[in-house]
Image 1 (cartoon, rainbow, N blue to C red):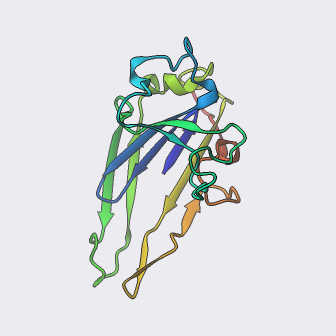
Image 2 (image 1 turned 30 degrees about the vertical axis):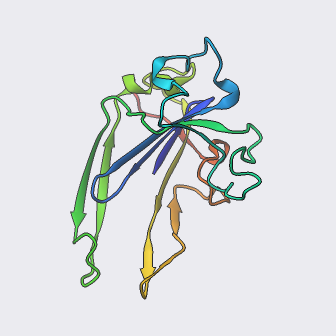
Image 3 (image 1 turned 45 degrees about the vertical axis):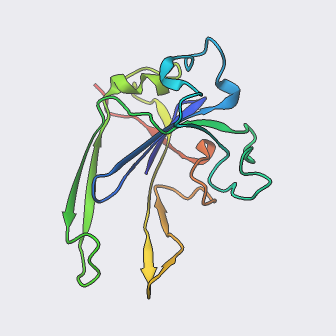
Length: 180
């Protein structure tokens, strides 16, 4: 999983070992106003794949639809596709075959800087030396033991203290260096 913070929005990208891509663009409801940078046809809240989202940790009946984050809920655009996104997977082993032991798999992701403009929020594209962007870089593993699915372990660039990955204020600060 890769999440990239855009200030009043963020982008989620998930890719699995089969190179299946899942993308969502989230916009905080308080930032979604007429005339804002989000007031474009791509972010039509009446689209059948536009939803409100409270957060991953907000699964109880009392908080699911409104969430518990101080900013409130987000619009989730599940039909969003990052223009020019490229992904590639290399597998060292077999998929979905528990009779052998795999070495692992690796993933490469390429996103054109021009496609990141919607996330720039006043920052330069491409970033300048010393620019910092908040990002979450993590991995979740589905585990099955004796036919029963067990809690998904998570690995991340840094610990952010809660299982909900939809908290941009807790993501890593990535500094861009060596840019010519």
